Image (cartoon, rainbow, N blue to C red; front, side, top):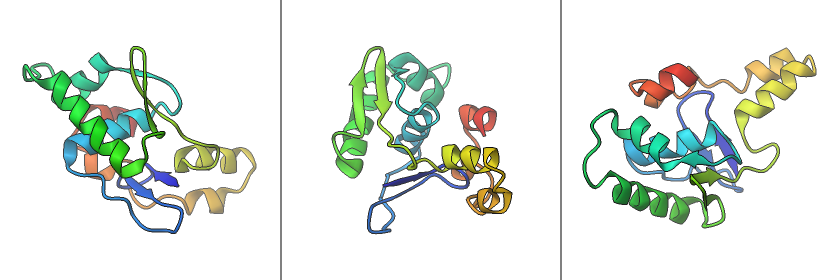
Length: 134
């Protein structure tokens, strides 16, 4: 599986097919988790980033629905419940942003630049977290 943040958010399965991720909010949840691969992101952080300062009363349960949908799309072992929230399990070499850094460190600048498909998280540019992390 390949997780792409260097351009619009995209997940490609092992046979090269794009994985359907759903609408803006599940995509935002996944992007937030991928920005901290293999580390837990708190439920509160996810809710604040996805819904802003005034989340709906059902934000926690809606977040769980989004996580369930992402698990269905990516595999149950990819989005893990881990206190204080969730984490995206990413294997070495699966995240384009990490590969970019490794290639730059190795001096392979042309190959590193080839990973970019546009502005980072381009499809989530309207989200506060995406502007800051991109």
